[in-house]
Length: 267
Image (cartoon, rainbow, N blue to C red; front, side):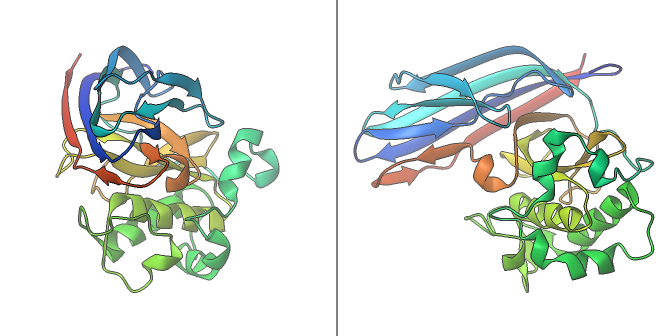
């Protein structure tokens, strides 16, 4: 990351009521990358749980452990230097499939919540007459933004791109799924992103997507009118199945509302 920067601090607490000791996987720890530099990070649990960390196939930092029965909380505080707004990719050209880097190829394919193979006709209609590349992506983002009212809590479970047919309200995760599906349908790699956005209302874990044009990934967020606001990325994946902040194994699990606080300032 270079140029103007913001300092963002994110404090998140996830809470559960567990009938029995429960194996859990968490994806809550941001890492230093092209768009962010982690300055400090603390993870704690109450009561204590021994967490083992590893990196998954997409490069995301994952922690796992067996949470004890009863009320269980995991808290993480991260401070990082990030860009004050995402870059505008409007001039980025289309990259032919045969020239894509190998790491981008999986993000061309249909996945669990992104049935891009079933939405090709819609994607062609939305992007008709536009030059191949980010101009198509911009039209897709505008279409998804115009099609739905972004309403937090309107879809508690992950919804696939095709399952959104007929709906007028959606959460960030579902709007990202549809944008990704349309991009992949016109041979533009697109991936799911989970993280945080300063100024999001209401404040919560946020989801958006990135599209690959002109040799790099570009931020796309159908829930927001602009790309303003500091963002902290936690994880990348093909869709929501790859980037769940928590996966629990067993029964008798009550997920309590998370607590999220995001603050940002100029460095």
